Length: 635
Image (cartoon, rainbow, N blue to C red):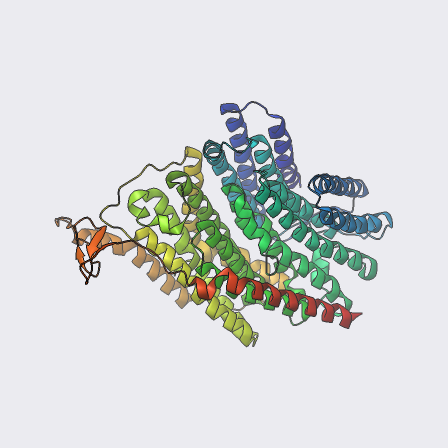
């Protein structure tokens, strides 16, 4: 218990210290990196010791004093929202905030939350989330030191508020630790709201009109989900006398479906599922560390984490139907929309929304295979997407652009960054990386659930995923004779994070069968209260190992075969007479033409103007209809 308290409280203390540390330069860097190192080290110690101890452990029975302190903290959040709402005349945000906090306050003061039960829980899913939050989130913080220095050198028009930025990163980590350790719904709600306010402040960091607009969009969407969360707590405590998340997940019958529907709605907003994907796409205006945190380690993982916890309570009911339909459709629609994007961060943003949709759909199905696939998807996505966001940020600082069309030949121009990016992209869609294995398991689960719609969503969504990742990967390795090595503008702290991410991705690739056997499957046994069917057969593991060996051995063999041969430079074929500079050629009509490399983005078919609005309307209709039918049917 003391270690858990430290992991929750220390980041908040570090945030307070960073906020008042006015001295910049080496002192701030040393203090910040020391705090990051402490968080990662303590997290690893906790995970190792808890894993050795094994089992599910609960701590801290009902404590009125702490509950009163948390209630006071919720009103501090209301005051902060009120300040910014009135400052920028966005009054709807204040109304949403005070409505949900008023509900929780009434519930606490009425004594309806005085229900016996522990507030803190640790199990294997908690350990996985700790590794994601503390490990990946901590590395993103390390990356932020060097990146933010370059950010303000390139954007002198923005006020330098790095103390505030670093403080918010720590608050984010503390809130996420609090959220994943909480088994009491009111505690989880408190930390849930802290992540909402932190994302609002980080997205609006530059204080430009666009940043302010996007930050308020993130705020109201997440506050809307928070209102659903508050309604779920109120109904669960007042009518069902349940305040614990595990107890609610185990009570899938009768009126318990109502709070499950409301909590699922809150999770869909937090995980940026359509029609709430706009807040995550708008987060691109923020510095890259914010994008990496929101898209990989913290904000969005809170939503899918809650859905996975609720998975047994969603199997075969309206809540599960809502989550699987919206999640599966989001997976397909966001994948299609990603095809038409050339901005690297926007491709990553749509890819994140898409993958979160698949994780949500897996949680909504509510069987062993689907939840297994969802957890593995969450693990690989966290590492890969964090690495890709950071590498795109480093590339942008090096070449002044994050457009995929400007990344042609990056394997020659910026070889180390290109290698990191290639590892991240391969982790998202190539065999034998875990994302592909997880999709195979999800396909089996969807077939077993007899949902033709989910199978269609998965098959066509995976096909479009292959399209946009293949284009990007092809750009990185498309080399022409004029490509020359350039300076890689990445600081030592950025390289520490990037290289560690790449190493973790490769280790995860090698060890995910062990993670399945010793972490995921024991958790599923407890969650579903029965034995786990064979998800990864021995034959499949052997096939994946053979593929991995082939990936490692093939380049070595090709290198051995090419020993002694001189490199031969051949001019590119350009459908005409190459002028010898690999830049111009003579066409069939005798005219001079300039050659260029470009991907095909199919904007007329998959552009935002064509697909985005219909997708938002469809997903909105599904949520509204199913919530009304679900709650109306129970009432």
